[in-house]
Length: 197
Image (cartoon, rainbow, N blue to C red; front, side, top):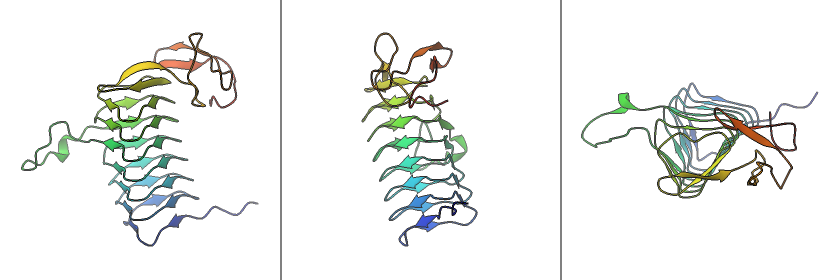
């Protein structure tokens, strides 16, 4: 029987009470994990990351340096958050008016990647295996497997679960995955390397 993977928390980081950390998760320098947050197994939390309170993060997520994951954000399994990307939590913030009870939930579905310095406006859903380009500003829902970039972010193409850009025939040149249209964007047509379930 394999030895259970150990949790690593760098001594410079703070993990509040009532936090659940999955086996094999690593939390690097100068992080703060706030109360009632759940982080799944084998996640990698980079330097200077703040998470919570009450955030749910799935298994195998990678959160790069300088990211804040606020209350109301849910990351499903294997989500990638690039360096210094931003989640917002209130649409019309004011320093003099407390609006945390108006926070809008944000959902990032399995396998999605959020590029460096992108901004995700609260209340949106990022679809499965979607790819948000660096510096994009996402103000509306992103379909499964969509490639979006720009300000505001617009669909510029489609990507395979392996990360390869799909051709006009909705096939991946990297792993030969084949896709078809569905209600939520695209879905895999049949088994292919790296395409996921």
